[in-house]
Image (tube, rainbow, N blue to C red; front, side):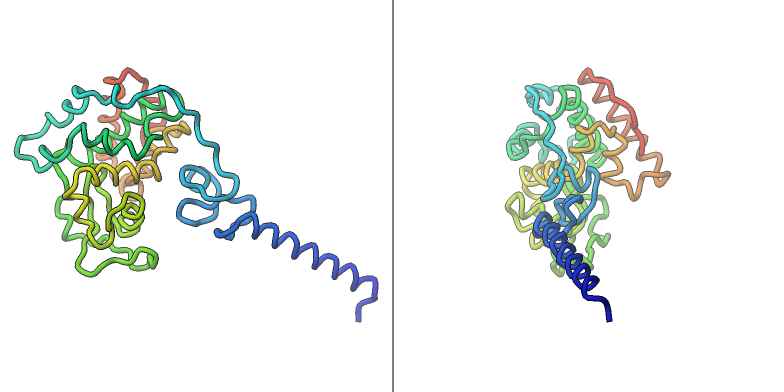
Length: 275
């Protein structure tokens, strides 16, 4: 049997430990992270930009970058936008689907795009977005992923966003939104049935642009304003397939589009172009 004094010390330590536990639980709230970790937009605990950046719910979230006076429509001019779409044949499906006016309309729901960080950050972000869009859609030619219906993009382990039988979650829209775990939250945020009617992205150009901007702001935007470089945006979009030697040819294609658009916008592309 422990001495009486030792029992008192043990009891005091237990009370202190419980106090720390409850303080940490309170600080973390619904995410149940310790107080020194961020709860990401998806509800996972960790550190770094993916957890503490855009969409961070709790914990030591990164401060919002300062805004600047950039007006995106002044940079994404008719000449700039049409310079991309004019690269494709008149019979491309996206020729009469994508337009600058709808892009700007969709942009109204995402005011942080192209307006945070420095003015050069804004130009690099715009160049990066359109570089990826150009590559993903073949210069706004394609609305849906080539051979998309033959591919399985259902993550059955994701119980929050369950796949609907008979529906395909293959690439659609300017950034080729894919997977049920993207269609579900995109639909919730934008206001359409992403799981039940994923085809809406290929039928409504406003929804199409909004899904791409939604994905960008939640997964890619912070990479630009934090100065990680264009290579980090490739990793955020398709890193598992292209980065670390996965497909250097597609990485090169994306980089070439990006550097071309940076030149058009009069901004240096920066470092870390590849992933």
